[in-house]
Length: 94
Image 1 (cartoon, rainbow, N blue to C red):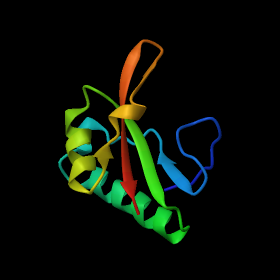
Image 2: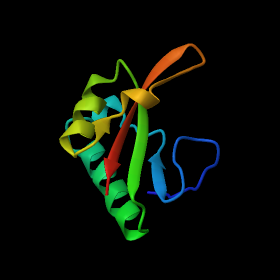
Image 3: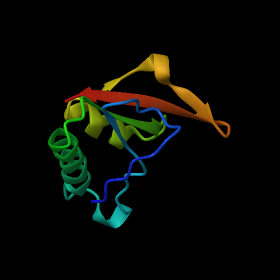
């Protein structure tokens, strides 16, 4: 896993943001997505971030289920539309 610091996104000071997490369809159902998300949580804790943020398309039901299962909560107030597509924002206090 790589850690990148980006500007002009949702994360503010002392917050980390997950971008473009994906697992190829033929490798799903092996727990790889969960391992990646848990690794991101662990890394964010290690770097002393207070919150982890991500955003996902509204149609990504399996991803949303995963995020909720590890403690992310949807922040409807931050949901957004980019390039004609709607995205839901999830946050986890760490």
